Amino acid sequence: MLSQRTLAGQNRAYAGSPGVSRQNRGQGFVPAFHDTRSGRSVISRYADGSPAPIHMLDSLPEEWVSRYDAAGHVASARPGVVAGFLRSGRFYTREQVTKAV
Image 1 (cartoon, rainbow, N blue to C red):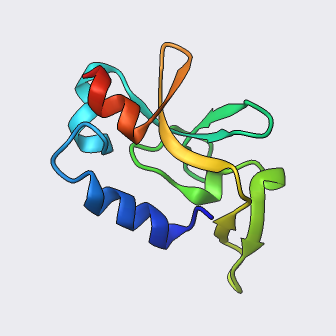
Image 2: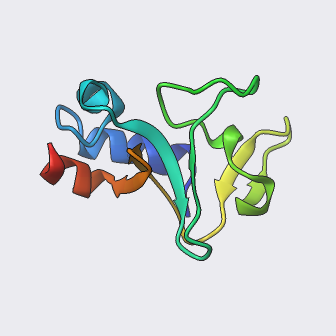
């Protein structure tokens, strides 16, 4: 399941490649999440609704969340929710971005 820990692990695994936000921003990719169950994708946002330059779990739709922590922040997403990027309305996984750039 997607969590802060898995996001950090993904960032380490893709460090220095277009699979992380910092390396693909110039090609028009926006941090996003995709729900494989519904096929819906959403961009990552701050609490005020503005687009975030990194993956922020707290911006997930409520129905995608499996667990909150004691402070009310998203601790994990339900199975099938993946982190990736949107560009021109299309969702790309981290691996797909590395091949697209």
